[in-house]
Length: 309
Image (cartoon, rainbow, N blue to C red):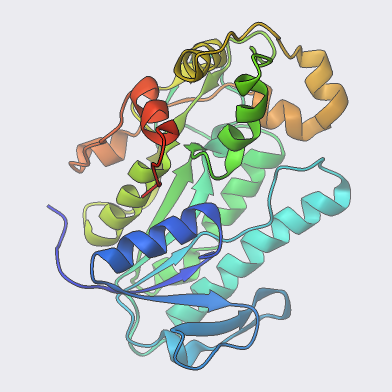
């Protein structure tokens, strides 16, 4: 069973969709949360200064933490030019390596380092059911995720328990894919993307912050962990369910050719790739999803007055 008690946790990427929800969740539980910031830390604001691009971090401020969570990285939701790819790669691998090496060199190391990764690790796999033991795919995202996870090695070698959370499609009306889809679906202009048979593995933001908290406390978890709900759906199932929840038709398809023309490699990798991922290690460790079914998750997220986490 996961350990209980108050934790002292530092979060990198605390201003993002997941990081901000996680910080609020942990604070509400009485935990002490510090945030890593690239600007000069404000006095008495529980901030730790770092500059991944320059290879600088205030290592002294990391001493005595119980846990560190790294969720930062350049957004992948933009056309992948060669420059953008380099920025995506550097923002994840360089920052992770800096943080991992810094933690490894501490006299009082944290017990656990939870670092984001992604189910992009698996690449395009059709209907194949994927677990944490499945081999990586080929292409930019699989190679990125492999390098991302490998950058945690200094912390692992120093005896810190490392958890690489392979994130799926995060369901939140405040950001990510759902926020981008809602305007079209609200006007009845949504529809299937590509042929609709590709699997989208998803997780509600509320459940994701609980997954991170579980990973912080559960000694049984280490290495790659699929942070997805246990019921992946096809794109066709996803769009039909979303249309039902918002009470609008979903009659305007987005052909694969259009996706490729408008969004290029990014659109193909994020919208047309199929990854049917299962959260095997989470379930084996005893984690219980509050929203394992897509329709209930969407209704929870889109209910009037609902706030995530």
